[in-house]
Image (cartoon, rainbow over all chains, first blue to last red; front, top):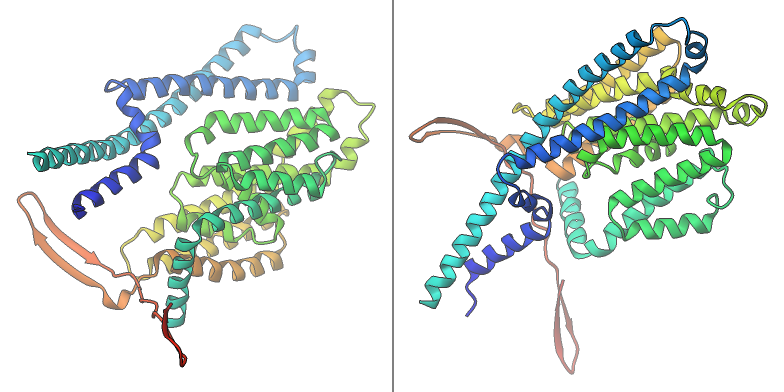
Length: 131
Length: 315
């Protein structure tokens, strides 16, 4: 005879695992804190690549004036300005990424914990019915 | 109202029954319109500007994840731009890469907005988009929406200046790159659209989450007005922007469309609002409960009587 309550629970757990769970259960692979660290490192790499692309576009847009002033301009000063802009930009970008990734981790963790509790409860029901 | 509720229930049951056919069909239609719009505006590559290729690509997009539809769209854009000018394609690829690395990698759910926004401009209903995005999506969708606006205006800029760019045979690559970048840096109409659409979306999103009665209707109306006012201000300041008649007509069409979508997704019956108060060990709760409008679709019974056998059919 089919246990309706157990079937309902199994269906909900299976639905979660096949849809959202594919992405969210990945946090179980990380130690606490490592998920955020790993994504922050990846954000650092992506943010740097984006900055380099934008810098390249800026150089190409202003190539004529840069070439004219190349020998008269203070290259160190320009480099320091670019570095300052990079630091401010990365600080802001990584700050926003940290807030978003932490918020996402918290949301995923809640749902994953609920899923794992559901699995535990299902296991308990099976053990009970076997006994 | 009852007829609308019955229609809503019928749509829901139709979707539940034929979900496997409806979703790929809708995805194919969106991909088809997107590719036709791109080919219409910047169809410079003969191999891609073909109805058969569009059909095949739309069929591929129907059965693949949404990210593939977006990738197909971006690759087709880059293909057309490359055949017009390598520098245009380079700048477009750089802009797409910056969008991807900075933001789009976070929002896989709303990625389709990147193609839906240009599609809405192509079919003439751009003012529906900020209202729908504000009503249906989260706050992070605003940035994806803005990326879609940038894509649309860049394609528009290229299509308007294509002859000029094609005529630049004697100038160097740097001049062409500068012309391509001007389409983003000095595009006042694009900045106006970014500001007005983003503001409208944020206003709709904030207002629809309030616990006042008819919050969704208020949000849609206020968002539409925000869009109109900002566009008017932009027209006065920049002397550049959408046509006033197009803006007003578009807004008049957008409001009922957004109201209808809001009704489909969240029809609330404010006349049966209840307020309850209760407490537990930690908190005292003030709860406002607004029931959704629901109606059970009547089930029809068809009884066929003949002399040999009685058969009863249930619908």
